[in-house]
Length: 65
Image (cartoon, rainbow, N blue to C red):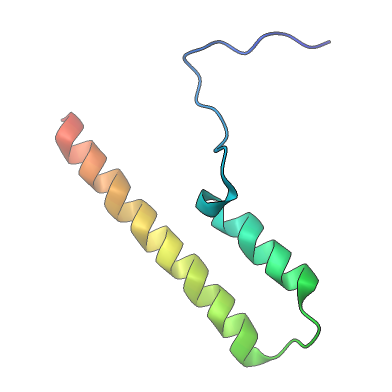
C-alpha cells in the first residue's frame, strides 16, 4: 500500500552527478577489461567523494551550531 511522503523529508537527488556510487557501478558494468589500475581509479573516486562529503557535512555542522 502506497502512502504520500511528507514534504519535510529529503528527496533523492534528481541528477546522477551527485550519486557517485551509481556512477561507479555503471562504469563497472560497462567495463570490458578489468585490472588493478581501473579498480584503483574507482576507489580514488569514492575516496574523494567521501572526503568531500565529510568536509561539506562538517562545514554544515559548524554553521548550524
